[in-house]
Image 1 (cartoon, each protein chain N blue to C red):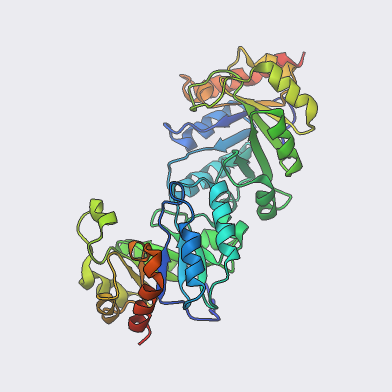
Image 2: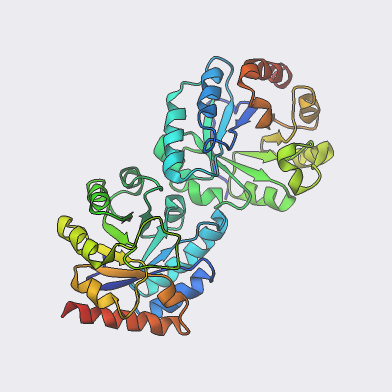
Length: 207
Length: 214
């Protein structure tokens, strides 16, 4: 089950230990942790996944793995997050069954609609603002595109890209169910505190 | 944790690994498979580390459509999810992959093979219930030079005698030296470069077969 809105998703940072970061994010109130590491070995990913899953269960948070559905099944994660170049959602659904969660990255309303049709449970929409965490192929989408996408699909939308405690409330008020961050938590002096402050800021967007 | 599993047909002794260049030079694997469909059973491993999962699945589905001789096995490197989605026969795991037993939990009918370069890796592969092992590089091969000197025939023999699992010799193996690998206890031989020249593929396979199935 997707957590009730608004919630915080923290994605791991390739430069830092994902288990330590996940623990901090959970302490700060994140309801979803996504393990994302494009260069780690399968064995390393599996070991991290087992550790993060344990901690997520303790905090009743969801544990999602980016791209690697094999590792998600092996480690009994709650689901996967798929980019446009990863396994198609429809193929992933056949392997995961109905109990596990599938999130799909979209950068347009069309991609979001397609993901909904293919059986996704949520959409990761972005990047909303400029970001240093990932190399980007397109211009930031901004809150208007977010709102447009939210209006045409019925799935929860998680806004991602350059989000912090200052700009997060606006995105919630424009219909995002959650925000996902990497550096706003991982590069903060006190990641748990940064996560908590982000979570508090989301409440402002509901008013 | 060893699993009990009875293979209906024995593993083929000849093992082809894809070029790894399907991203820059697509189509070679399909050409190879079309030729192999008229020969003897082989193991074929799709090893295309430069492809994203979506492209890898497309390639695996294309490959699966080609009917190979009975007893052939079509495997994918590491990605059990892609292999399942494409209906392949199993997965080949590099030394640093997720352990086979963790993957077998959701892919119970799969063949799992493991690359091994050390006795420790051999032990881990056995414990995780591998179906076969891939050992190399036995001889000098251009693609592996950056990792240092080849392991050699003597070491191949040492590994083969240590395990009851079938071991495929990889790295610079040709029809001329394959018999030496078999004499050391290898179950079969694997290769990448030697199968690249599709014009000679049938001939190469036939030469290997005469040595591997005396």
